[in-house]
Amino acid sequence: MAVFTSVTRDQLTDWLQNYALGQVLDFRGISSGIENTNYFLTTERGEFVLTLFENLTAEQLPFYLHLMRHLAGHGIPVPDPVPDGNGNLLGELCGKPATIVTKLAGRSHLQPTALHCAQVGDMLARLHLAGQDYPRFQPNLRSLPWWRQAVPAVLPFLDEQESTLLRAEMAYQEQVFASADYLSLPQGPCHCDLFRDNVLFIDGDPQAGTTDRLGGFFDFYFAGCDKWLFDLAVTVNDWCCEPESGQIDATRCLALLQAYHAVRPLGRAEAACWRAMLRAGALRFWLSRLYDYHLPRAAEMLKPHDPGHFERILRQRIGAPAVPWPQ
Image (cartoon, rainbow, N blue to C red; front, side, top):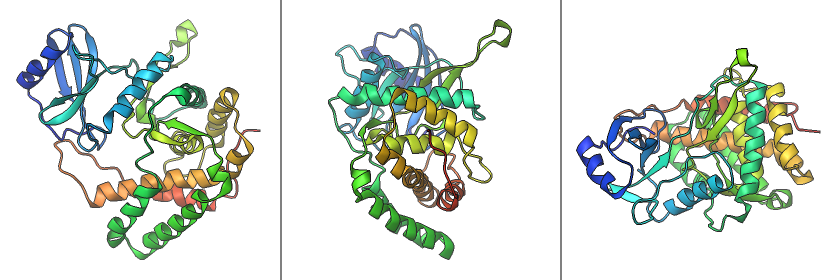
């Protein structure tokens, strides 16, 4: 969500002639993230987010946009793409594919409690079930085939210990992905990037006796069809992780898993693959952060993430004597 492509107010105003959103009242870039150009947009009709896509193609994007529309139609709180006057969810602005989506209410909680984690687990299970009848298919583009391409690109930048870890984990995951248990795991559309900063909560009012409630999930542009357990593992690795050590906080993790399990019960093969998927989720983000750090793209507001964070998580997931699982 860094600003790779600058948009002037005149360019935006001209482009918005295709939409029934009224005049532009406010327009400002969003600095977080590293994949797309995003702007907060306020018009006479409300608050929105404008996204210009820097890597995804116009051929790939309908999967994501129609998935959000599908989920929104099934009661999942996600940004809903706004159609233009011709009913199109995708346009072109400054030479880039572009879309406008509704802006969700709330704010991110970067130090979540078990209460926050339980709500995330509950809604993630509902999202998975709601996506079962989504007719479009696209694989997770940052899964094993991408790992195979990215590993040779980053290896020259790594020291001996990092290189040894990366090679060993890739060999392990190749075996996991070929196993009968993994192949039997239930699957469907997944968010694949459900970190704390991609979820909003509406603050509760202690004086009124109300608690924080989930406002919605956003940033679906890493979504794809994958094993639901992998999506759950990616989520746990962020929401239930101690940042300094990489260890899982058992209280938060069990709150998230039990809430998920109450909506979509987890099966035997999922229990058997749980540790492997926690490792897979850590590998995926360690590898992508290594790639972005060592092979960066230019951007006005780019803030690359620290690869070491997910290296610690991966080492911890490999070495931990046990990992939480709902009973």
